[in-house]
Length: 244
Image 1 (spheres, rainbow, N blue to C red):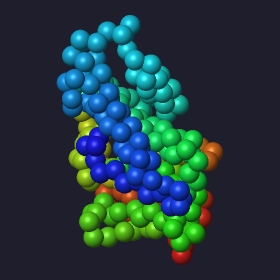
Image 2: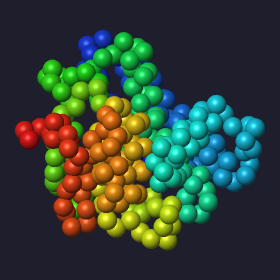
Image 3: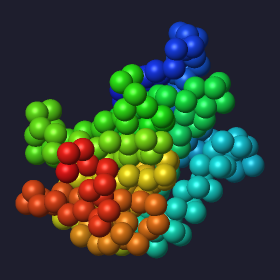
Image 4: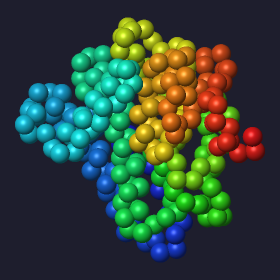
């Protein structure tokens, strides 16, 4: 769904198959509404000119408002308008959708679960062993073979943005014709996955200044890997690293 693998693990004993089905049905709805690649989605119809502003759904209006808010908070580095002038809200929709899915589970009374969509994750409570959830940061150079850090998280969100898996899918709006080459992987831990995801996208675009930007945000930590394989982290990132 949403052009990515989605994993949901619920530890609480009262979970039933219909609880998982409800979450996946929600993700399907999000995909149908916000997919950049589906001509029939609201985003597709917006970009074709078929859908006029007065006919936007409440959900689309909310996403556009959140994107504009993030653009202002990141000094313009976060921008859902791509190089071709089309609206592509995937940089904010994924984290938002994961967090909204978590809210569905919380509302149903679940406390211990894990939602992973394309490597962006919301944790809640503890895992099946009664411990904090563990999340690995993949090496951008050997993503299928090497984990560079293992994080332990409880009721936090984590998101990674990078160019190693999907290529130059984001760009610096101040240097539209230049490829991102300084930082190739940037992981952000935030109060929830929505916050972590939007900040990770913006900070990646900032290049070497991204970690400093995260350092000055209360409640966020970051870990960046540059093209030479050198890692830089915010001052309190280590508290989340297992066996640091």
